Image (cartoon, rainbow, N blue to C red; front, side, top):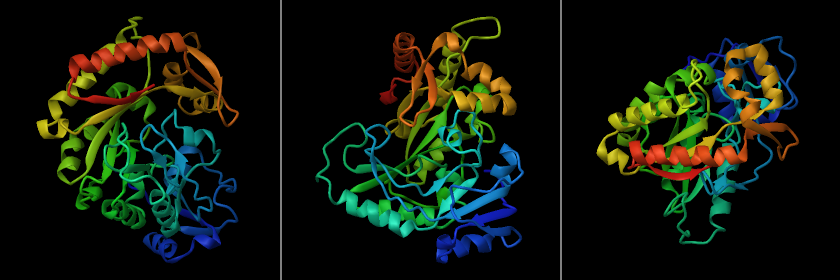
Length: 350
């Protein structure tokens, strides 16, 4: 886990409730500055990585909108935080904010009240679908990495306890970090942690400042033993050729990854482990920013001869793999999963 020790904490006045004050008390040497809005920050004169290392923001999330998902979860819960210590080159959260440090929302009680009201308005028993057979599932980490946030505020443990004890709701989140503090909490399989995986040498280039793939795989059994439901994300799947022009390089690397997973996971953990598969979508603005930050990564991410453009719902110009080519890639990926890790059900793939 990263040693996050911010030197600057920005806060909005309405974030300084008891929980906000407790976060401030953790970092007594940090300079503090009040701001009017948590999502409109002043120019800090720090580069992309220093902002993520040195700055923490405390805010109050005003919108408690709950959005339908149907993929990783039934619904996307209101954010507990925004931004991340990591600097993954394809991160959709970074692409929407010029300055993007970790922002913790301190009005967690409002968040949980909105979830409780929402889930109690839904049909019960819950219809069985691919998200879960028994509970309505809520993704609690779409805009941040909950494994990092867990070490910054006791509010995340309160959230875990809410879902653990709720008769109808279950939490899920994806992560690229292994935080041993989470192992001290027993969620009784009511929190699903999804470790994001890709070939190790690619992760080192694009998953900037995150835990290694080897460390993530090694943690899967431990988190199961601690009481979590554990799944994996193969996300994003990046298609690339080898240095010698071998167009099957990405396939060979994924086969090796699947074999690593197969060797590491105990039988009882395999029995409950499923996966999600998401092929890369990239963004023009992010591509331009990465050329200054991490140009080597762009050699993998920005490959126009394989990709087609798409205007996102937010008006941004994204690129994704050509739809006809992608259909073939999906079929290849599914075949490799069946051949190498047939015990791993694909919950969804796109």
